[in-house]
Amino acid sequence: MKTWIKNPLAILADNNSGGANAGAGGGIVIDGSKIVELVASGGQPTMPVDQVFDASRHVVLPGLINTHHHFFQTMTRAHPSAINKELFPWLKALYPIWARNVKPDAFRLATRLALTELMMSGCTTVSDHHYLYPAGLENAMDIQVEEAEKLGIRMTVTRGSMSLSEKDGGLPPDSIVQDDDAILADCERVLNKYHDRSDGSMLQVALAPCAPFTVTKHLMMETMELAHRHDCTCHTHLGETLDEDAYCVANYGCRPVDYLEELGWMNDRVWLAHGIHFNDDEVRRLGHAGVGVCHCPTSNMVLASGHCRTLELEAAGSPVGLGVDGSASNDNSNLIEAVRHALMINRLTYDAASVTHFDAFRWATEGSARCLGRDDIGKIAVGKQADLSMFTLDELRFSGAGDPLAALVLCGAHEADRVMVAGAWKVEDTMPVNMDVAKLRHEHGEAAKAFLENI
Ligand SMILES: [Zn+2]
Image (cartoon, rainbow, N blue to C red; front, side):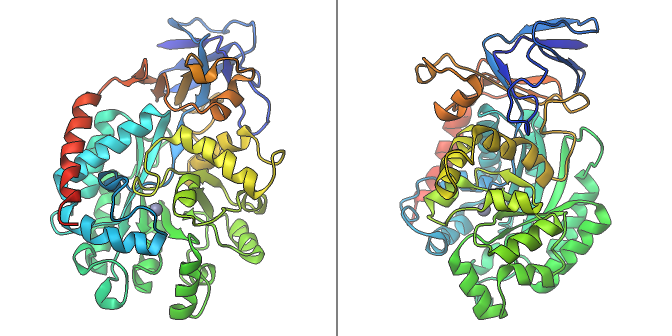
């Protein structure tokens, strides 16, 4: 079945060029799950097509890719115990609430809600860094796989972990961490069951100790060994706050990047969440090793964590992707909004001419794909997966806009009109095709009430 997405209002078909349309002004042809032709402005497909989708109202982007989130945190958005705090006190306020209440049913609803919310904002591939394992939630990865498959979104399930807790001088309560053996056994189980490295894969697995300081050195090193053996990516939080720098120097006698190197984690399987507080030498070393960084602009502003050095990291060789981060520090899961925030905070870091909407789009698409170790998604090009996010400019906020691609970012697009994953429509007329959104809103809201009790 060949479909011509015909004559879009605008299309981002070359994320790097800085030029719109890039030879695809007449749209694209999709065959099955792949893009098979770019059609020049005013042109016709060279091959016969079975159906035509008139995209003359749509701005077409590669499907957006989210590379950092904690879905369970959707249960504690704008939580009165946590608002208006920086990272460490914010975590200390929330850990006991999560420890008491993140149970399988609530976790399933949190996952469903975050996936749906992301998809409605134009996201076609997600990863979720899940590191919380209270008793009873041992099958967290299986729940996430079921929910992603039901919705039809592409996912990297990220098997997180914590093995150091309050009894070891760490921040998390004892009840939400596991021991190294249990963690490694489940990592291996999940890899064997779900990790698919094939072209166009709908499901991959990454391994993700929460932070190098919430697990043992042994676990960090064994996790990387497992990743080499199963050819998967690895993820962790690093360089988020100055508190973390001070903690690392006090407890490990070195800075976080030095510790990462000591653990054998300076390689291109790794992408880091946040990556803010790196000095020039560390940026150079991370870039040289090909370590990716997921920039989380909204979270960095909410928690006042700082400015990610996106342009220097990219120039040094690091892939830079984009993430909404957990919903308690954002507090939503809207990726196209994060694109706008990325443009804004990076203009404060650099200047107005050095950071454009094309940079922000690149981080949310091709950069994120590279963080996840993928080259089959993230770009509208022949041979890539047909993952698309399509926006109309019909709302009042866009009226009078000149440049359609710039308008998405500058006027503040917040919902996709159409989303396609692997050649199939998953959002139509702003609504997901496989989900009762009103029912989900009700059920999730009810489940979240427990997280407000006993505070
Ligand atoms: Zn995070």
